Length: 469
Ligand SMILES: [Zn+2]
Image (cartoon, rainbow, N blue to C red):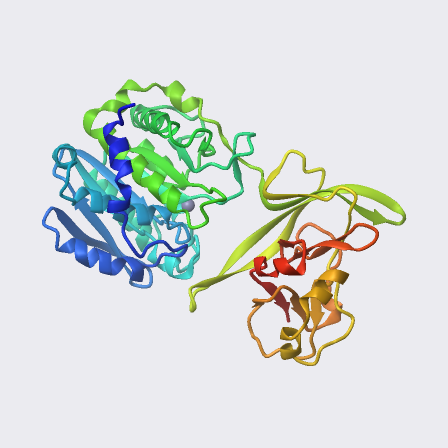
């Protein structure tokens, strides 16, 4: 079958992909040199439009001279960088000189495309959702207390965009409706009141989303969802839709085989090229609201790890349980590195949930954190410890008299406790996920800080244990 124009562009995507951005954590220092390069390109205009609380620059990059204005902003939540990367890919496409020149000229004649990459550079530096004073900018659209929020409102009032794209990442615990697929992308035309009224701007956004999901379903069938459409009066998307700028929220999702979200970055690129094409040709007008309304809704029903059909025993009574476990990244801004904290999220009948890793524990008894009975003198002794010994007996934790590591984590396949009385061996929601599973004759599995292991050979799958000081 003949490829469409946008499919041909997608096929050439590697040529436009900006190098050095395939990281989980993107800060202003990563994009500043790229913005400096863009300043030298005649067809683009780069403006400094504001500063964050800590004085970091916020930029607007303008391409095109058309009547239809488009505004896109990314990383208003500092820990959501996927679309920022895609914006630099899009700018490479828009400024290239190749077989797509005719299409490119049409876009730039009909549209004025304004990119604001990284609205929250202070949050990006810390890898937090919020800004430097821990305010969520997407709850500051009415108060407009923060300079970052003000910058966005001002630029929107100045440009008066016909379409706005509010670009985010969502967590990895959603599914597409009740299916066992996680969404690669989620969309929303945010409602501007509790009644969910559809005005011309919101209807335009809905039609554009119907257009996008129609095109995307050809390449990622079953991987597209709609974000919760509860009205949030304090958010920008909801407010802009009420101010006649059609807002399209795009949430970069999660796919287990795409840990750095490079495929999802490419899907952002494709969605936005498709949007520009549609906005320039009014293609979105051919779509109806049914196309939007029929998108399955995101449901929060995934865990990182689920142990199914295990058993616990209390006072001689046995209970069959599933355990849902998540591993949360904790950023270390001075090192630009993460460690993980594995947590028990839910216990009991979890048959309505799914997980990125599911282990059948039928016939196995589950026990909580188990501490090695001999106290070690120093952390160095712990480093020498034979993992096979820990694994065979189900030990999850070593007791250590002295530990000169100030961190809360250790890159070893066990945990460290400095005091025995802090042991959290109860299998309980909210407790750290340290478990072992026994089949009556021996230990079969261990869970160390939320990481699953079947043998000592698996210990490299445990990215870190925790130090309980
Ligand atoms: Zn967000």
